[in-house]
Length: 461
Image (cartoon, rainbow, N blue to C red; front, side, top):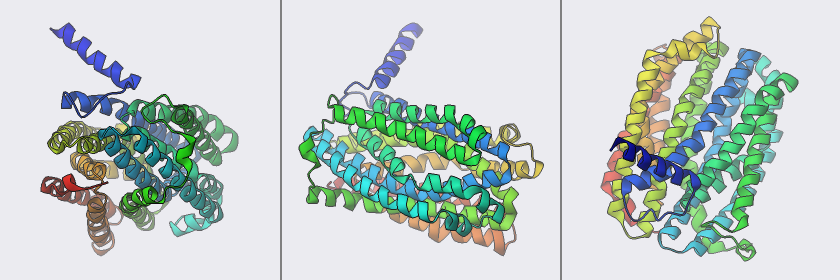
């Protein structure tokens, strides 16, 4: 019995990694969740590893370098937000068309989203390259950080179109149910990143980390484009699809703009908190906070991958006219994510010193990092549940409800609370740390409420 179970699980793992075409609207729901979740978790797990490797090597350059990377990444989250917003729209529409058994329209939607992504990314590239120094100053960076970090920031912000395409094309693959291809492209990007990062840092200093990241991501995009245009997958693109289709483009934008705003609201709040920590705690607090954020991201990204499985299953099952199957898929995914995040919470609460000591020996930085890791990590189970519910709504094409939830949870609750605790009660950076799990818990509860309300089942895309 035990051997047969092992063989069964191994067969599912192999099938998920091969990327074989599967109808996720039929058969076992748990099997469908696992088939999608394994490559989606692995897709973002290596990205998590790179985030840790990157900060490990950058930390050897000192507190100013750590702060530069952290502040720049805080701003780049806005670019991520735009990319994720477009990706969310592409996933929702492609998944719905695949569920309706209409792969041609799915391919057309994918191509139109690419046009939008290239234009948007090019504009962000120009702005980032021109105003890199001003961005760091706006974030409250010290003069040392501005002088040392501007080249790094200019390279990272000036290649925004690469970030845009990497997220967007993977969103198309995920919507089609080809999670394995999305995984492979991000793995390629991350592996090249991990190999080049220490080499380029030793040769070029801090800006070498940016160069390695751009080369890695560009390689991932090249891999994506090759397989997207090769025409042997679920999505088969023809050159005629590249003619502008204004009605379809408008449909994509109508889903993308609230999704983009949704993530800008969330990432914008992280920028405010990063600045608040820097202002109330100084460079050491900022450096410690950024080390914590990298560790948070290390475990958040796999959970996000699992949440993406929920989005695909909701989209495809709604397209197939099976809303109750979509509900069951989300609840099962949320259960898996809650179990995983509970284990992470335990890890952060019990072993913060061992985790943070790996990155820095500076006692002041380590003190801030350990404190923030414990506090922020305490709300992990709610992060996991909320993530699945938000992505389920997005996958259904209801991108506006999560936008309102984020606006309320982050800007009308988290930020005022952080300022009240940090400045009003004079808790300084500790106040900002406390505001994070409190707000995320509230957001998760509200998202669960709107999911059970069920209006997302009637969304037409």
